[in-house]
Length: 506
Image 1 (tube, rainbow, N blue to C red):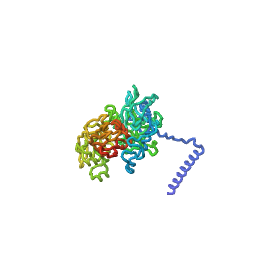
Image 2 (image 1 turned 180 degrees about the vertical axis):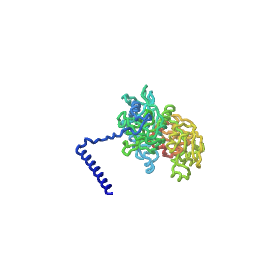
Image 3 (image 1 turned 90 degrees about the vertical axis):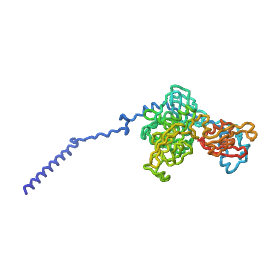
Image 4 (image 1 turned 60 degrees about the vertical axis):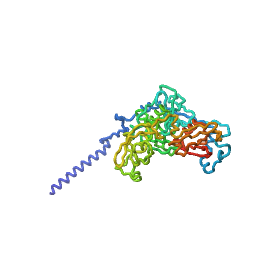
């Protein structure tokens, strides 16, 4: 036993001495016998890869786009009489203070002929935005709010060549306008299919922010089918299904191009969401599928052929299901909460509390999706609508109608009067003398439309619109077509009763 213990002690001593000598040797020799193992740094690369496994290259899309995006400059001419109309009496003045028949409550002669007594002084204001050349013969798409009410429109190409542009047509409902310049062999962008755009996909925004020409920014598609509600300082937009992106967009980018990495036009940049008026991470573009339909209609008809389903709808959710007492296995689609009588939906058999899930085979999950799909069709087009009713799927064949309930295509000259639902007639000189008026337009018939909704009856004589005297049907048409907010119509009935009506031009 003692012998074994002695052997263990001797072994431990030998090992201890050996370790001590080895350590001492290292200390004495410094670090010349120590080897460092260097671990290679991690390879830094792009987080996203193209289909070929290579980093995304934006140079091709930028080169394809930059020469097809133009700088749009506008001139607005104002005179003192227009300034005076801005300070004209408001609707509240009439309702609360009254107006003697045929008199301006603020003095002067007959209100129909109230004018600024000073000699008008011409003034100018200027604006700018962007546009996209979509054909080599000079057609250019931009936003309606970029050129709305402009007296002159000029476009400047990336090579500094400048042209005077003609406004071919506008569509305030989608905020799209079409211009034309007299040129040939211009660089242009082909329309891409915005339906194929994926959330997270890389995109470029190209335009002229702050008058800085040919500016390119990159980002991703953040969302689709965005509805922004009321947009300040712009025309009322009825059809909203925007592509949302975080590519930097600022004032002056409006009307510019949103393109994919293949250089295809997938949207027209239109708006930003910001508390400062400057880019704050959220920008919105009109999808190319909507813009292309508007452009094609303006070229062919001079006016957009707008199809209507004839329903009011809300996004289907647990809260909506509870409020409207609707049962469903899952919460997707759009809930119909109201149906316009004799509309396309009503005639087809769609009912309140139906949940729309597909439009012509395309899945829809919110009201903006439905708007975007319907906006692609014309009146009298036949489509299918799939709904869930009582937890069962039903299919409906629907023949779309226009905004006054007809299946007919509208022409440029009669679109306004189809919309207001009335026929008009200019008064003869004899009728003007009998009524002691200097101007007036008689409503000779009223059917379903904006006039009927406002309460205007047959026989009403329009004398002023938005405080401006109207002397012809063409003048009335111009005022109503250019209006971007509520319109005040003034006039009298043959019995001398004066009336005021407010209508929405859109």
